[in-house]
Length: 299
Image (cartoon, rainbow, N blue to C red):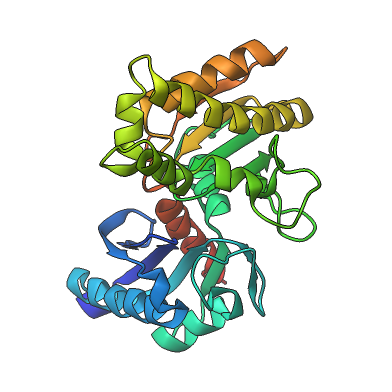
C-alpha cells in the first residue's frame, strides 16, 4: 500500500479554553496529538478554522489519507445547531458536522457531546470496560456527566442527559435557566475563588493551598459539597457500578479525596470511584473511537 493510501482517523476535542487534536491509525491508535488555545473571545469560526487547518497538517505529518473524523463538542449537539454551549460566541450557531465535512472534504464525520465522547473512550479503552451501569464525571473548565448503560452512552430524549451544570445549588431557588452548579464548582469557578483569596496560580494554587487546614480548604470543601449533592442524586437514581472522573480539576488529589469522603458517607451503596487513566485525553480518544464508527461498514 502506498503511503498516501494509508487511512488516517481524526479526533478533535473542542473546549472553551483549549482544543485537542489527534490523528490515529485505522485501529484508532493515537499517532500524534497537539493542543491549541481556543481564544473563545474571538468567536467560533476562528477556533474551528484553526483546529481543522492544524488537523490537516498533522495528518500530512503522519502520512496517509484522512478517511473519517470524530468531533467532541461542548453542549447539546444537533444537526442544525448546538445548544447549551455559550462559552464560545457563535458556537451554538454552528452546523458542526457539515462544517467539518466541508472544510476537510470528508464524508464520514461523527459529532458528539464532549463528555459522551469521554464515555466512549472509557467504555472501549478504559475503566468502564465490562462495567454496567457507569457514570463519567468531567470536571475541567466546566462540569458535566455522561451515563452508560448496557455498554452504550445514553443521550437522553433531547441529547441532554448528564447536563448537571444546570443542577440547582443551595442559593439558586427560584430557578433560572443558568448553569448554577458550574458557577459554583468547575475549573472556572475555582479560578475565580483563587483570585478572591489572593492566590496566584488559579485553581491549581487553590488546590495546593487546600491540602492544609485553613480558609482555602474550607472554601474548597464548600464547593465540593455542592457537586457531591448532585452526584448523590445521580447515584441514587442510577446505582452505578463505577464512577470515572475525568478533566483537569478531577486530576487533583485533594478534590478527589474530599469528593469521595462525601459520597462514602452519603450513599447506601457507594460505587467504585476512580480517576481515568487518560483523564486529560478521554474526550480526544473517544473522538477517535467515534471516527472509527463513522466509517461505512465493509460490504
